[in-house]
Length: 245
Length: 142
Image (cartoon, rainbow over all chains, first blue to last red; front, side, top):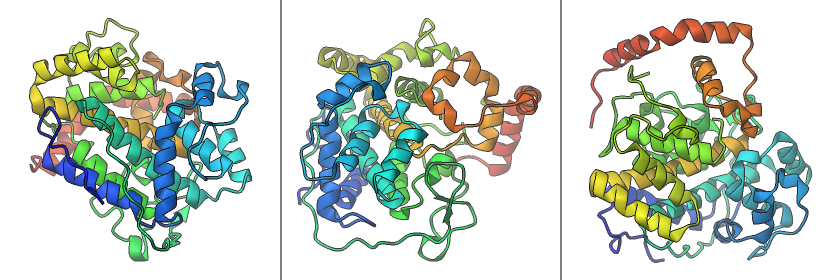
């Protein structure tokens, strides 16, 4: 499997970002918690495909995404409801609703598999967006690795006011006792904890690209640009994505 | 929370985009172009940011755009509410910059009278509270 590299980038990319992205790409290819490696790579491919889907474009332009009926243009063999999740979360996340999520669940997609889809999807979006930002082509998707998923459902995951169960602070048990060991995590750092490996993966990427979650509250922290500059970018991105959180 | 004043309308694009942040307009344009589809705009914006903040700053800017493209999707696809203290502290700010109009606002219970009152009481002292908390933590390592 070829590794991610930024050697051809117009600027030098920090080693920790490059290494985090390499680990992320290996994680996508490997058997996950509920999806096999092949399926995870298919989810990644479908994530990329979502941005050229005509149905998604029409829905995005409509006053309500529910006003436009149709079938997504998909590239693989994933079930229709999985394709819909990927396309909706990728292209129009700001208009997702509890009613939509309930419909997804009613279609038979388990909450665990849903969370893992989100984990793979956001990894691809993150790295692809970074590539677009610095002006390099998206990396080729990795070759899937054979093996069975672990099928680990954490004991401590409970309903906590979100659409999916989460592990609360202090409720990390057994193999997940490390999950929040650095300190208090915001809700977004716990949102994928129904599939703990997706939290670990997300933290790895975000820690290199931004800050580890437990350091975010410290406004003195900065990188080569100031904290105010970072938060201005963050705020504008979130406003464009219509993200209230 | 840092005690500094900035024009938050730059975030929603409804103001002059002169946020008061150094190179703020260029950074906002960069975020918009990376998320957009205009290849000429994104190429031009990359160069502008590179010229203004240097190569390391440019990489960090791209990394922040990438990070929040992730964070936003995680938040909106899992329906998480705002964290407790953040919810209380930002009641007025959210209304001021129009965040309440986003669909995902439905994931956080609307603030009642008590929360609004608490927010107004805490708002003037929040920067001091932050300074005390950070002083207790000590200087950031690395």
